[in-house]
Length: 166
Image (cartoon, rainbow, N blue to C red):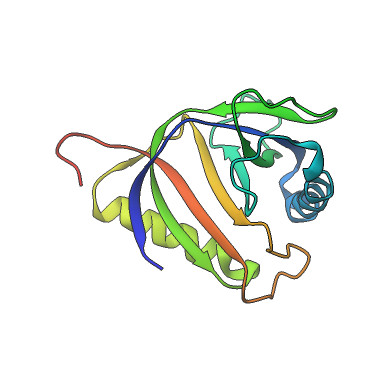
């Protein structure tokens, strides 16, 4: 499980938008995960049937600073039709610091985010807060069982690369 600097090309995602207080995020994310998985057959043109992408803006225009916006969906080809009560968004090409976490979801935030931020600091690159943090999850993850050891999430934090960095 290493930390890497990668470039992710532009992708289009169709899925569900969650808006809730931060305290309810784990519960609401699990509900949205289960709902999305139950509706996957409605989403045509999926590019990877093994992955679900969770993402969130680092800056929000929401006046309620206690409210979280989280998106969960699947990457699709550009011409896919958006099912009822879902959204479509294009995530632009960007550089990310990536870390593939494997283990219990209870430990994910502390371990994965610490590893990525350590890499960012060591390599003197900068977090780009003007775009989304991505969490690419294996479709077989079980968000209902936060202690299960075989969950996989690739954390991707957007960064700005300056010519003298790396």
